[in-house]
Image (cartoon, rainbow, N blue to C red):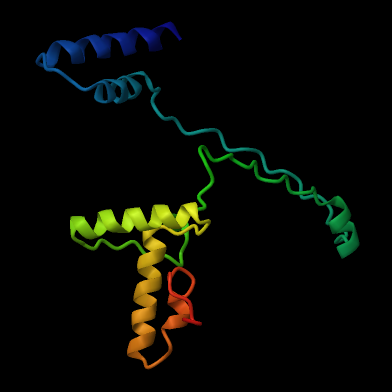
Length: 158
């Protein structure tokens, strides 16, 4: 055993002296050390053949279900933060970007705030969706007033 260590250290010292000094990455140094320290592969002794055991009778389906261990439930990883419940996480909504005039945007904000005070909860995306849906219905020849009636200040009876 002592001879093995001495030969390893001598080989290591010799390889250090032969190599020029260069900066190596830590990963390269580590793999190099593993190669230097690893013992020479030798042929393992062949294992003695084991006697073959007598075949056991096959278990029935009922025995298999009784002996089978119950699978452990996979640990549930709790997600961080709030649950995703908005339009962004809803597959029925698609994000789009449109430009409108600043004056129009300010007037929309004022009207939506007035509607909120009256108890109608509507945001800009829902308003745009309803208006575009009404436009498509009108283009198809359908009655667009039904779609606009929920947030229109005009009533059908007028």
